[in-house]
Image (tube, rainbow over all chains, first blue to last red; front, side, top):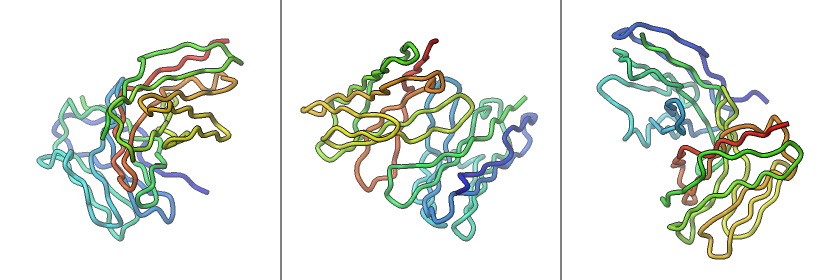
Length: 113
Length: 110
């Protein structure tokens, strides 16, 4: 069974440029999460979807970050414009609804120059 | 949700048991204890969870004290591939909110 797929694995951009990350969750998982992980810290939740509905986006900086999950499957996280402080690993995870067992993708490492 | 406290780092000799402690003194009666680990350059991986009773699976054992204020994750025979950051998390049932702290960096040495 395929795990959570993320792309790209690495992205280097200059500040003020836009960037997008893509996630394909495990088949049948209706809950999808985007996390941000800074160096030396644990992942921090940005947004959680149940099917196509964003049910928790309280930690998403909405001035520059946006996300969508069309048809309740794949999801895209976008940053526009990127800032130096956005350099981090962006992790996507999926799970069955209300399950504490989340399955994580390998993450996208973003470097903003 | 209750917060957890873990030592920032630990070492363990290869082949020996690794015992990773976690303090969750403010845990409420219906909160579960979850453990995840994150190997370098990978996403976190679920290990085990429990409520009151000790739990064991193919990866590890979870020992929860009777007062539930602390727990220990046990890797019975640590290998070099167990080197990772281990996260202890407390979570309400039916709540998808998983709050990761800084975890414990376990280094298994030959």
